[in-house]
Image (tube, rainbow, N blue to C red; front, side):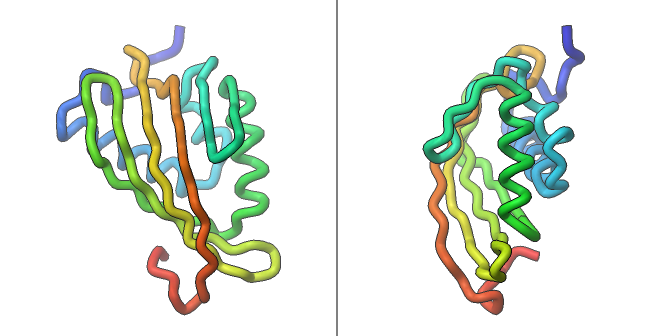
Length: 138
C-alpha cells in the first residue's frame, strides 16, 4: 500500500488550492518520474486524444511531451471542487525545436482516491501559436 499524499479528500477550499498548487509546482519541474508519483498505479487519463492507463504510461507520455515542448511553463487555477473531485483550468507556454512559441489552454477534471492520489485525469487542450514577445509566463 502506498503512503498518503496530502491533502486528502474530501477537500475544502484551502486543501483544494493546496492540491492545485502542488500539481502546478510538480509539472513545472518537467520531471516525469516526480510528476507520475502523484497518480495511482492504475490511473486513467485522457489527454487531448491520447488515452493512458497506469502510472508507467503516464511517465512515458510525459517524457515524450517534454522532449517536444521545450522551456515549458505552466499555470493552474482551481475552478471548482466537490468531495474527491476538482475542475481546473490551465495555460502553459512552450516552444518547439524550430523556436515557435505556443500558449496551450485547457481544462482538467480530476478524481482522487482516499489516499490523495489522482486516479482519473481528463484534459482538453488547445494550442495557439504566439510570438516570443507575447509570452506572459516566465
